[in-house]
Length: 484
Picture 1 (cartoon, rainbow, N blue to C red):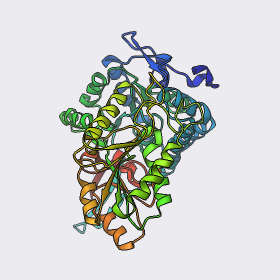
Picture 2 (picture 1 turned 180 degrees about the vertical axis):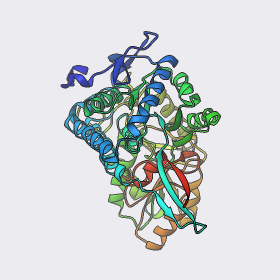
Picture 3 (picture 1 turned 45 degrees about the vertical axis):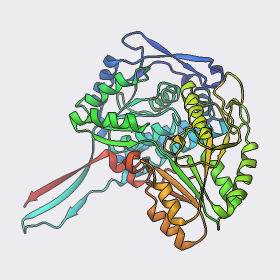
């Protein structure tokens, strides 16, 4: 299947360190598979501690020259990278679908979305402003500078193997940081393809390094313990995020953590039901439910519960499943572990009174292709109410009052994204302000964009990605006091 890629330069299977393609020091490799049929795509060099240290050294050595370039010079290289990504969009999308499984239409969207962060931060590089502050004494002048934090480690997930890299790396590069990228072991090929295009764009040696590995804990420990790595940005599970926080404490690194979600999707009686159904479909089933901001719990007010459920179930029945290379809306889950979790949560919900109205089983035997599922009569006692399902299962809950649903929605340790549909302005403001989430979609199920700050609160982490706020996480503030 890898032969579908027309630009063969995008198919890389080695470590990328100091602008060179290298085998792992150990000589070890690991297999990358297509999650739809488990066919082998290629073998990739398996980075270990020695290789990771080499990548850190390369990034550290490159930092001095990269950060003294003008913002305009860095911006120009970023812009070349953006143009190359857009030029190779179809190949990058195909490669993404092959290793991750999502439908090709979604993959094309991810490539464009990922590139938009490079385009945005190429411009933001020119707008890193400091301050002058009126002095506290007659002969004192106060100046505030913004400077790059230093070497950045970017640990990225498998569900968006292109966009989660560019969302972290673009602002880091824009301000003058160098980076070491550790992609997820399931999806290293997208990261390596981006590195190839970065090299073509003209990034100096060592500014971008990619270390694929089948031993993320081992590599992560080197990155978190190194005093030369000044910042770590991670997207992934809350459990791993907490571990990384502990590991980074020894060197007091700057951290950005985008962790698990448990998004409520609330539909009030005065909603446009048809639009709410469309929004719920878009939010819940994108990438087979394998997104951190997807609707995990759908709350519908009592008066329209049955009507919404009927229209929602009908729409879900129309979703096509299959290989991401075909014209489908639902591709496979990433691996057997993900499938096992979906089955466990669904079985628990059924045992506690939930009713499967649609789906609830494999679409094709002996695959991880799970049918899009609607679970009615969901309750807070079910495990699916507290665990992020990360699959195409939509539990639907009934509620009565505004205050009741706010309490239900906030009854989780996560606080990443939330959504609600309604038309009462007073209720809209009340709910928007009282939901304990970093991002809230109002009458929309799609909120991700490069121009807005992405991030959560509570155990969903801290820091923001995208927008003018996203660049601050890669800067340090220096205060100068000058006596004249």
